[in-house]
Length: 230
Image 1 (cartoon, rainbow, N blue to C red):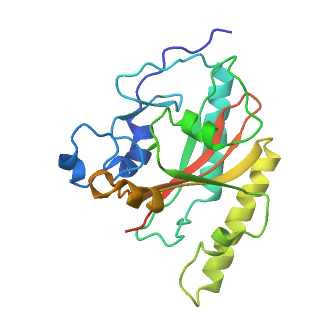
Image 2 (cartoon, rainbow, N blue to C red):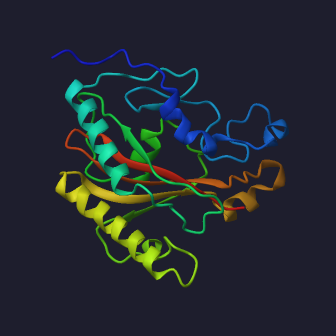
């Protein structure tokens, strides 16, 4: 079967990342910097296969059609499980979950684990180099971030629904044969930023959050959201 090599730029897939690329007027401080008050590069581009890169760079596209179809289906299923849920986790906005996938290239090395290197590679170098990336297993229950899905006291029913959704998502990853399902948080490393000094400080406050796993072919699949911390 012919590999798909003619992937095109996809504005809808880029749209779910855009809030994390915004610099909120701070770009005048350093016009040439891709990361000024943001954790995902303002040069970010996304293709129809889900591949993420930066404008001006060439990405390899060598995708099996069946793998693209699988990733599309799986990502939609994952988002459906979390439909109607906000990520909360102290979020100062109201952010739901979007389907997310990055289809592997045929013949690429397949990782057994979702590591920081895998996440940075999947984002094509668009994540701020000094961002802190935290990865936690979805299979280990309970998790403090599950319990933080609802931050207001006296909302036990809503909290129960949120926890059930996360547990359903974890079970879904296993049932669909996706391995090493994890929760990924991309944050500003404030200690490192303060040490760099105010002139180089990155005050990124829209922070990516993902729940993803790996297909047998090494594609990254799941859901994407973000939180705002100011």
